[in-house]
Length: 68
Image (cartoon, rainbow, N blue to C red; front, side):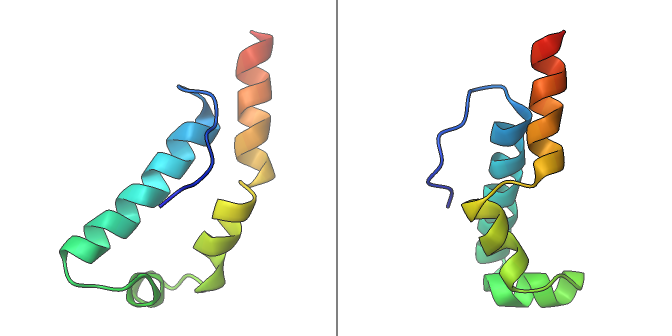
């Protein structure tokens, strides 16, 4: 699960919540994260990389919304 504490309601927070949800739903189905990523055709390291550093496009969305 995510260790980051982004601003509540931000695109970053939503993104990390979705990532947590995918992991939890997979676990509930008896799947490991490597099984989930393999089934989805996503590199195993991708979700781990996203947890360390949220994709720039997500962070830019927060900046756009903050401007408005």
